[in-house]
Image 1: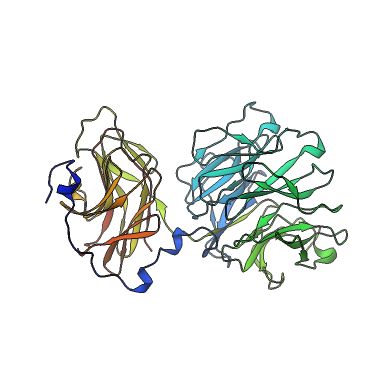
Image 2: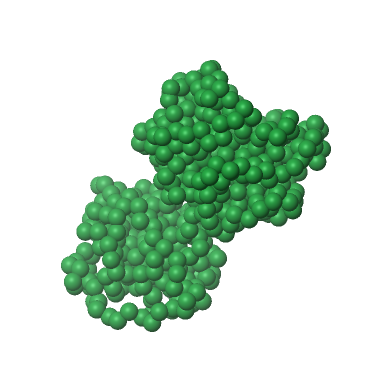
Length: 480
């Protein structure tokens, strides 16, 4: 047993047999680790509040559980886009709707972070609009000065213009509504560069732009199907009224999905459900001209089965996210660490040793999991679940994942380092999960180990950091 701080891997790793495998239901990665397709979660959409500012709400697909997205600064919010794992929203935010910037935040509104900064404040053309996540969650595509850009989904890094030259005031140079393909290789977008509003597709780096629709009709913003084979959009290609259409991307064949006729009125850009069976949209088709916009869902197969979800929607972008029930942790008992939302970093001037960390306010009373990542693989730190937090050392952590400064991953059950299980790089996602009284350890959706110890509830998130500058980042807890 190794009870000192950082020691040789050979001394710390106990050579014990792998515990018996769990049942088949527990032998595969969790559904929540998947991007699209996935389990249907909440729909994010905009409504107009008193005073005329749009703000974001989220709702279950059946219309229950509606919640306003937190807005402590009382600013305009629009064009929400769910991250592929359903944890966060990207959205456009503005104090006065004159110019906009891209923000991200967790679904409960915590950790609101501004990503874009208008190079010419007050210039509406320099605004950030139409955010859309890459399928790995690492980047966000957005529009500025009527060009499609990409940038990191976290602060820092350069922005890349994919469709330059800019031309907000020249019709044929306007590009909008980027939509990342589920495999991450392409971005679809709406453009007037052909002299008409058409749907284009390009490589994710901006190369090889192709006009997919190439018609004289108006086409609206595109949305990918979860399997990446089709695009849905609205168009007036069959007459003066808007309807929804689906294009097979490989063949270019377009099929009409709805037949609203003159009752259509306004139709929003659509949002496909994560499981691929339904499409959400905003319309006044049941009462055209009355300025009463309703959020609906319909079958993706034939446009039928239309069901109202919310009757006071704003005619703007919306998005349907995968299910995620967790939340960013809130820290207490922070010692020798800098706290930035749900991320910890040990102070650079703090002494080396297991003498820094924090614990979560939230705790598990039964089944659930904690998930976290790290920004580097050159420091020593441990994070996991614990029944209580008596000190800032690692021996207080009942079920921990020990990440080493040489890139090794070990499992730590209490005071003993039990098992060397692999290696890691910065950005890998780790999880400690409790299910039916059994604790398991995961890395990037792959199970590493099953603990032989029995958990004692409640279990809170507990951490300990050895190396100055070590980080434990983006920590979330899910009690389901």
